[in-house]
Image (tube, rainbow, N blue to C red; front, side, top):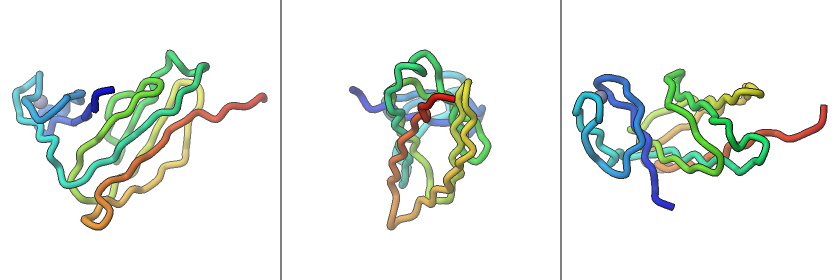
Length: 118
Ligand SMILES: [Zn+2]
């Protein structure tokens, strides 16, 4: 499967999936995927949630949704990021703070929906 970069346009705030560095489809601002750090998000497969996209928020900024078994790479500058993931049925309140630094520039997160009988 091809790598997908998800970028937020610094100019118009458009969130897009791009295969590589290129212009924002909305306003033409260059979206540079060559950032010093990145968060990779992998969503575990789940047959119940197959049709549901999970919303991704970083520092309370919406970053679009992630589909079942999808992997997204979010190129970012160094810094601390609060990651929040929500889906239609369950609101996850476990928001990890992810520090991206020169010593630890790449973080991989796995997202999954807890299964159970209530
Ligand atoms: Zn734009």
